[in-house]
Length: 81
Image (cartoon, rainbow, N blue to C red):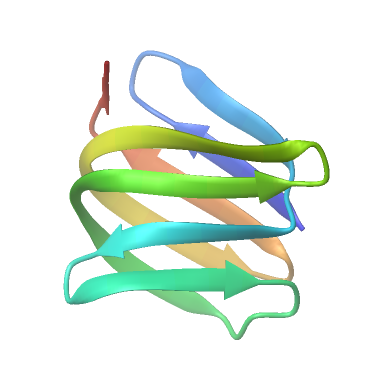
């Protein structure tokens, strides 16, 4: 499944992932392959990305996520260091 994380300034991440966990407005949720279509607001928090090479985290300051046909697009307000 393909994941892209984009801010107004840059593309933060683009690549194939096994799973991703997001800080949803009503609690965290995980997306796996063949997930149902979804649009959700994101709160400030950590996105955990799992790939075949390992795991990494990106902290965002809110935004939204769309899941459709094994493609995930995150539009984040900003990425926090």
